[in-house]
Length: 549
Ligand SMILES: *[C@@H]1O[C@H](CO)[C@@H](O)[C@H](O)[C@H]1NC(C)=O
Ligand SMILES: *[C@@H]1O[C@H](CO)[C@@H](O)[C@H](O)[C@H]1NC(C)=O
Ligand SMILES: *[C@@H]1O[C@H](CO)[C@@H](O)[C@H](O)[C@H]1NC(C)=O
Ligand SMILES: *[C@@H]1O[C@H](CO)[C@@H](O)[C@H](O)[C@H]1NC(C)=O
Ligand SMILES: *[C@@H]1O[C@H](CO)[C@@H](O)[C@H](O)[C@H]1NC(C)=O
Ligand SMILES: *[C@@H]1O[C@H](CO)[C@@H](O)[C@H](O)[C@H]1NC(C)=O
Ligand SMILES: *[C@@H]1O[C@H](CO)[C@@H](O)[C@H](O)[C@H]1NC(C)=O
Ligand SMILES: *[C@@H]1O[C@H](CO)[C@@H](O)[C@H](O)[C@H]1NC(C)=O
Ligand SMILES: *[C@@H]1O[C@H](CO)[C@@H](O)[C@H](O)[C@H]1NC(C)=O
Image (cartoon, rainbow, N blue to C red; front, side, top):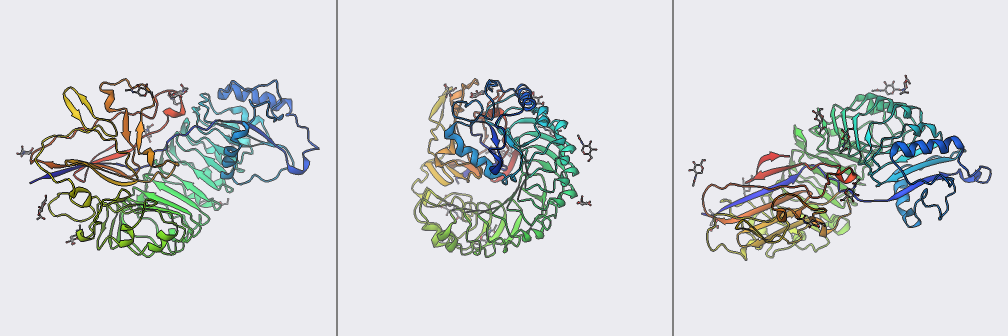
């Protein structure tokens, strides 16, 4: 008998890939009608504050010979280079438009510059500063208490090296509308004082080391439009606060530590355009009632312990991505053909108990679509007769004796038993001390199942939710000199946001040792935002979870 070994790597939280944006900008934004009445020069006390800020934050190239408000093209040390203004507006569109003020208000935006100082206490000396954006730097320490008295409306420290508890005095900055602390190392609990930020529309605290329960006072954030709390160590059940948060447009609770089931009150969130919940331990439930969410464009309920069947969701006519993977959903796939003719392009039903036939419309989708129905219990006879690179049907039907089959494999019958297999994941054939590691350079993709050789293949699936990566990005290449032994094995690697499975076919009966070799080749160890980030994934062998990282 032939045995198949499947080794799966399943990331359970999104790993954000850092992208370099270089925008250097201090914007002097005068209230539209008053431009002529106001002086265009920044008061001396505020220039002095900027000097202090430059020292505190580690910014060396501001040119104080030029007034920061003389924002013309010859003084680019203060302003965004012209060609980057598009990026600047992108940033602003995340915030609500700051109200028109009679005073000059200004913004400090220093993104992607690897500034290695601290959050500058002297920010508090700029009375009309409303927006600070220090995204992608390497600032350390915590938020200074001097900021409690500011009138900031927008604060973003996304991807830095900030640590310590989220300070309670943030609750004093009641003007805040946008707060982004994502991808730092904040720890401890979310302070109840954040409930005082009643104007807050965006609260983004994903990818930290936060714990405890979400305080009840957050129910006072009735204007919340965006809430992201993924990749933390919260405890307890998902709080039942949705009736207070009924303005939410985007909700993300991925790998947060919180337990299921999903409260049924989620059904009140009729304004949602994006809903992402994943990796819930604890109690399961049936598919929640989402029938009011007719504006949804992106829906993920992954690993939420959902059972029962998939309801009719045909009213979600704007749906583009649907990920219901890693549940216990059963029954047949509902009729999504009209949605697919509309906007639905990405469909992930991976690892459920779905049965019946794989619908014809799925089998006839072209390469604009990515459909993954792998690991289900569909009827064998409904498997497509041809192997298709954007329709993953790996183990989509129940096969009684653990063998692999299907159109993608039938062209490779086993000829003889083998007793070992070595693969250079994502890289070229390499021989190390007499052992040949086979070539694995197929580019992979978002819903692909590639039988590479008669004796092994790779199933590569997942959609990159947080980046604009393309199909070329399912293989990563090293970005710096690798110092370890046998570095040829680590120069390339597969990147898969949902699941990566290597299966070995045609193996003779016996006991096998599985060795996985890992090295970090993207996140650098230097004092840089490139060095910030974590990878979190589980390893399955023969569909059993062996290890979580
Ligand atoms: C990041 O911040 C922590 C806490 O302030 C500090 O101990 C650590 O050295 C910083 N990391 C690096 C790489 O400098
Ligand atoms: C925040 O406000 C409270 C009272 O509203 C005050 O007691 C406290 O000192 C303020 N915190 C800071 C750091 O200014
Ligand atoms: C996260 O916080 C816990 C305490 O809540 C601590 O034990 C752990 O070391 C922290 N992890 C990191 C990576 O800082
Ligand atoms: C919400 O705000 C009101 C008014 O400030 C306050 O009385 C109430 O205690 C707050 N609710 C919670 C749960 O903190
Ligand atoms: C899969 O379907 C078969 C019938 O086609 C059924 O006998 C079996 O119990 C199903 N397996 C699971 C795990 O539901
Ligand atoms: C088990 O798989 C082999 C192919 O490897 C097939 O020939 C055989 O019929 C299968 N056994 C059953 C009971 O389906
Ligand atoms: C990794 O990448 C760098 C630069 O892209 C290159 O110089 C180096 O030789 C590569 N390979 C190894 C094994 O370090
Ligand atoms: C495989 O290992 C198990 C337990 O370790 C042992 O009982 C069995 O005999 C081994 N089988 C072979 C073929 O070596
Ligand atoms: C960190 O490493 C990256 C890539 O090698 C490099 O571009 C960047 O300048 C480095 N940053 C620092 C602060 O050393």
